[in-house]
Image 1 (cartoon, rainbow, N blue to C red):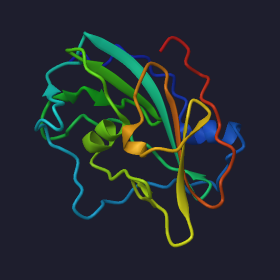
Image 2 (cartoon, one colour):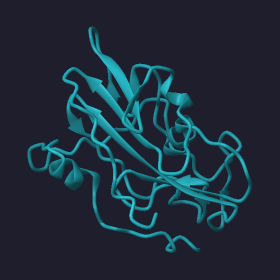
Image 3 (tube, rainbow, N blue to C red):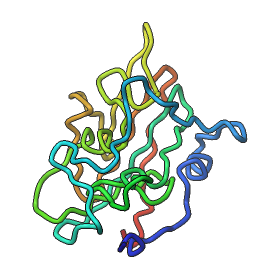
Image 4 (cartoon, helix red, strand yellow):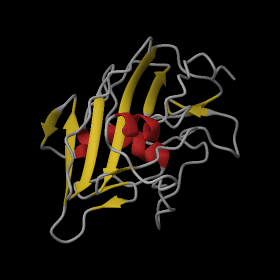
Length: 184
């Protein structure tokens, strides 16, 4: 199906979080529970993004996403955008749990973070990122390439090697920079 040509460095976002000083107790991964009314697409076109038999060849770029829920790194699952019931792969997808988003599209077009969340079937807005939700007196802060992003996080442009950190808190920890791009 052509899904194995991207590199799998085996560095999970939780292991990286420990290296970066974002340690959390063993086994305390935050796995997003199903969100009422939100489901991952099962092969149908979503926002103009289709699920094709193989990865697109026109655009091939990668980004990194880290979601911190009250200081704890959330688990970004492997195989987002690869439905179980239909043998296809969306133009935005993951292969591993390291937070790397793969954009592999058959045509030129720009993408935003909301496109990935739609393919993932998770909510994203000014107060929510997947299951990380800002309660009363809390907020969601976004960082793009180490710089504060004050707009709607859904509009964050996914460009080559964009590093996105979404934090719900407090507490707010200094956003780590993803620098392990290797040959991606």
